Figure 1 (tube, rainbow, N blue to C red):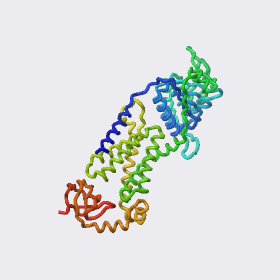
Figure 2: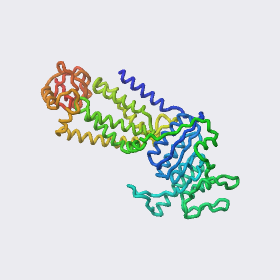
Figure 3: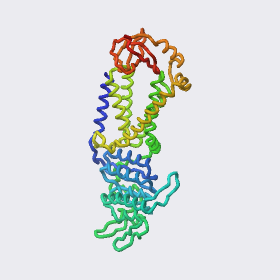
Figure 4: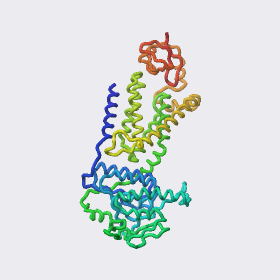
Length: 466
């Protein structure tokens, strides 16, 4: 029971820590995020990790150091949503180029500055054929729908951050003509792209720059211009594993299926060996994917481990007590779900339905696939030569499969006494030997005489002896 109380206490601690209050910028810290690659899932993971670090550090300014040719629109919108979680000042420094999705992300920040000879724009959506087929022409109707949807989202961001909606529209929609103060900035049929000088040119009454607040020679010069020369500047570095996380999260359901199958095989073979190692490794890779992606911390890996310990304790140390096993299974399920929930400081302890959609989808796929896999293994594997060779290869300090079968055959018919309540699993004593036993489904009280009728794997199947 001590294990049960320890697990429950730690689980409650993690739930309380998940509900920490929101953090507001209070320090003179500047976080710099490099947007120096195609806008794809690994970049979203990098941005999420960096923004969460900035939020936790209560930084006052977040700067995107941008040089990108663009990328996926869906990932771009995800990155914009991530940046919105930062409550301080957000700035884009176009270090060289911000094309397409890069321009969208820039508009998603409150201020834009540009380096000399840098460019921004050319944000019209294109279709890229799978497998590296390159850009493809879209049907007019499809293109019109996509342009309309994307331009509406980006105009919303532009309006929220004080940028010109007309300029953004001209970057997305080639049918848009942009005229400012009587000057044709962009002709109909063209996609707007601006140099640093064009983006910073002043128009209108009251006067206002077209898009950029100015041309600045370097990132250090920008910090000086903003009065942040004495601020603590933290540069977020790429770890090189964000791309690994993108693959791990794509195959997350498969990792869970492998984990379930590995644990099942380990339970059906004596000792601890290859199936258990493979299963546990698959679960660890699942949690690693969520951790690298910046979705969750390693605390849920600890919750999973404690839950697994409670389940093992229920099976081998306290059979029939039920409570540790139920608590353990609850902790395991909670850990598997929360490892894929994107949490931010100040969010409620209980995730919302949209936050739970991805982890629940992964779990449903995994449970369905794991159930089918376990059923197939239980029907096919015991009758194969591979199963007989796997047992001595995966066991540590145990007898061979043939010797085990001989011992089990000799036990059939033996009468013993239930050492614990059999619900239906538990322990029973046969002479000087205590065995793991299981009934055919009925519950047998502690102290009842039982007879071994057969075996299933390493467990003896028993029935009432009277």
